[in-house]
Length: 377
Image (cartoon, rainbow, N blue to C red; front, side, top):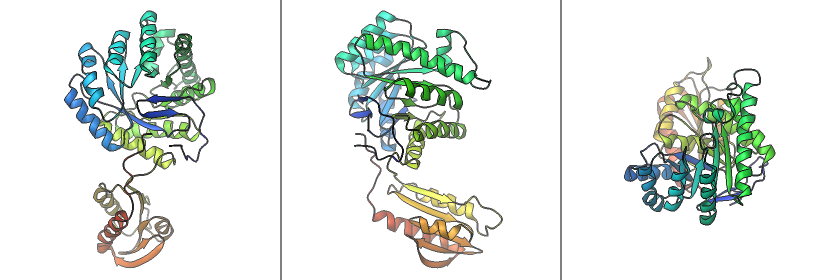
């Protein structure tokens, strides 16, 4: 399925992660990572199921020890999503993961120093036609080439660290391609926004490989949403990025929801569910708009038809915004007007606005196709 994005996408090689094509003209895919112990295959598969239901395209699992690698065969065979094995420190676990049938390997050049083992991994990955993501993080790449610059807070520090990450990746790309291996995906993530953006921009300038975007150690929900939104929004709007992960300290399902929201707002993915637009409330607002908006969000969370709903609280912007939405209300003092497709339907008391709006939302949703099964090809 070709992208119909409003932005000019950077042209890259196409890499296939199981059935999911990455790069080229293919849609930007959404990834997440399980928080379960991978060796607990039942719990891991249950979480993968939840991620798939939320619209995830690719799932990554941690493989820190042999018992986790031993569970990969069962997980890869039963997973509804292509499984990526996340490998650090040892190439032996990467070999076991490939033998188990994973769809992709992630290696961290910042903590693997095993040239012979790397060559074996490249050979087996090529034999099995499994791509490899070379993913460096600012925290783990420093020991490879010394301390370098700061984390972006000092003048030029972020740029120096971005350059270090790109330099390390360039060495590994050269090694892989010398072995005849070209199915690579790259990522360079820091825990601050400027360094992460700078590193991805540099990668986009020097290679045609697909890029995985994200910011590492992004933090709890509010901070992660802000940092990820800035990084992903900036780079994707520049045409950079082929797959994304919103990293946060919390439920990975929220990573997928936020990632899908970012892509939809940029026009890079179809929208599923209700998109609410509402005014920030000011001295002109004469209704309890906060309560109305929260109730609309809560009571439409199950709707998967793509709808834009306006919940507006004053006569300045309210009528215009409500007319532009699929359905909406524009409220004044103790009353409001209900709109559908730009046409006013009725004037109602404030006490009746919520239920009337919800009735119209559900009526319209029933007439629209469900767009929740996100395209994965």
